[in-house]
Length: 391
Image 1 (cartoon, helix red, strand yellow):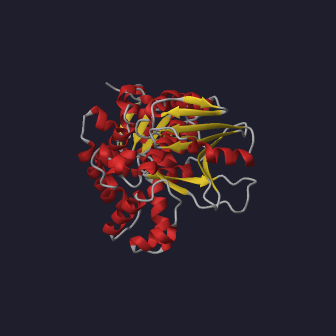
Image 2 (tube, rainbow, N blue to C red):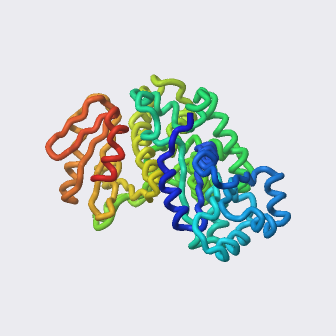
Image 3 (tube, rainbow, N blue to C red):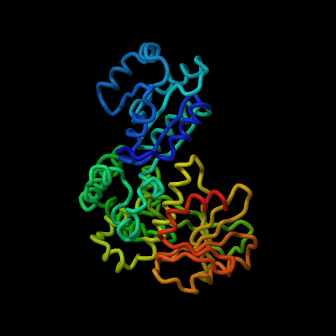
């Protein structure tokens, strides 16, 4: 059974407005399945296949003339010479919805696009399932959700996450890293990746990360960029507009998929999540990554920040709405609600008024406390969409 992806209506809308639509995202996030199942009137070519690539590049003009429009080029970054021809043909036809470009290496694909197709392309991102795309009964225990992650193959083929993620990580290191960066010491990069997992949900300190890995700070910055462009990690910037200079300006580090984090931290079961020293950070990563994915799958650029003063007062997630209003979210892994959870939100309210205040916690009972919404884990995945887009 193919699970409907939320990004599909947005992609169809973009195809009605742009001559070219691109779809990037991590490997095995479901891009090919989505494109083949939802755009059956498009001809499909995989440019990782040597025969497809050679056929097209041996005579690109003849190919594009003969095939017409409505073509999907999967892993399009593998044929950089094709892009200038796509520009010419898309301009000459002057029609929308001519080509779909897909790729797992956003840096390379977007580089090709910016060189030849800028202004003609709608750029979109598909990640592993977001929680609202799945059957709700699979998510009663968030500890298990962290272990399983959201990659489609785990659910479609019933692959054990304990086998899937180590293989996925190894393939990423050996394949994408070698393609994107000339990294000679792959063991150092592997160590770097695990050290990043150990800093999930924390302020990113390049000097500390570089020292612990045994590399230079500039190399650490380069490798962080590589992990971002490969859809392994993302950074959340601090929200300091009009605020005190005491606010910390460094970003926080998160992973797009909780299963990758758990695997890198060598967590084997739900109890391992519950007793891990990063217990709270793992839950925070789960919630924020879901908010990020849902935004992208709706075709929106997430405006998500955190707030932290030098004295330690912190708000985990601030979502800036189109009308400049703020949705302020505190994230707590505890399964019993504690009134201490509201302390930071109250402190933030002294700095910025007229904000919508939410606490998401790992328990099972939702409630309202004055003007603060207390949302339990079971209600989070039932209400996240409404919470974000109607706040």
